[in-house]
Image 1 (cartoon, rainbow, N blue to C red):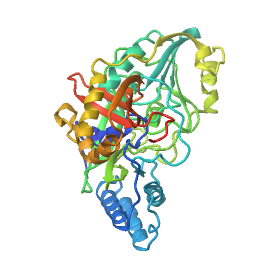
Image 2: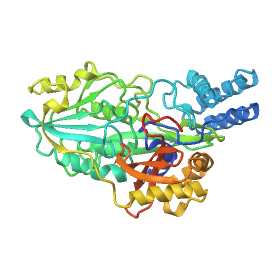
Image 3: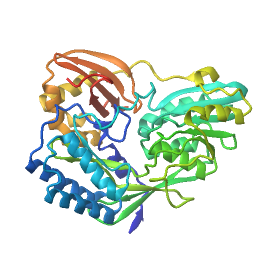
Image 4: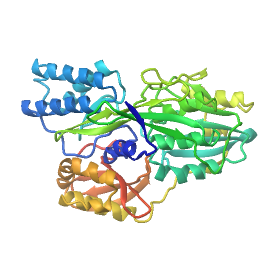
Length: 448
């Protein structure tokens, strides 16, 4: 059964459940700064498989697929396939492989808390303000903007309004989506709103009600924006690393015929997910919903979004400019005739004090949940043992230094302890509450 709801709080609750994990990385799920992961014994592996099986049965967007994946890992555990996997990272990778072999869902995974993700580390994201890297005026009245993520609307809207308004009067628009790894569907829809008529039906998210086979449908409709580019030539640049909400943006504007896509086929992940703790050392990313486009009645899961003009991502800007009759330049620095938006380079008032308060709460094992958003408070309660252990062993705070505004809207600080350094991000609401937070090693730093 699918029922419609005008509310999106439940969707946001599930997406933001891993807020404290994801602010630093800009990825669907990242690991917090917990203590070094310890070995797993047989009882702990049993607990992890039991909890993951329950989550798959009760939460996964496709109930029959979730049940099959749960049966598979339960059988593997019983058959001894996991007996030698005492390392949390290796166990997480094996569980991810086993459930992915059945679900084929790029948002479905298991992560080891405090351990680096498998494979080579991705390049650090460019400096941005809540996902907006820059906006420029190019030759011939062409506007350009790069967006690498979609933080929650409360943070995203004022910044994207400022950046897009700075491009008002452009004869054509290029939106660089090549490094966009996704985020809040409401923010995706808001960026689309700049390119389509107000009231246009952009996308739906169909979400499973936990522990049932019922679903809710949330429709995203184009909202009023301070400027609008309907009827202008618009090009959206894509790459194979464009993922999740970045793909949704490309898919939405393509099917609404609001823009032409230039670049590479995107990554192929369409199902929004929420975090589920699996004992003290692992966290599962469980997709609870699926995108459903009102035009195609489907989405891009597993196949990605195919551009109208397929070229190497590195050539996409050059091709877009050529189509607009402008000099064929592949680098935005060379093409720009004037940058009209740059990310904020100073911290929000009160964010350093919020970082110090947050660390104090976690070290003392006594967070002030009333000073957090409900979503962050819930995530903190679930992850408090790991967060406390990871910070308490570092000793006293020596200094707190502002670094940058992160891609998910957090003011990022390097906090130097007696025993190491951690990168800490916070997002403050208008009431001064901490809306989101992230803790992890600085990029490239060893895990002390």
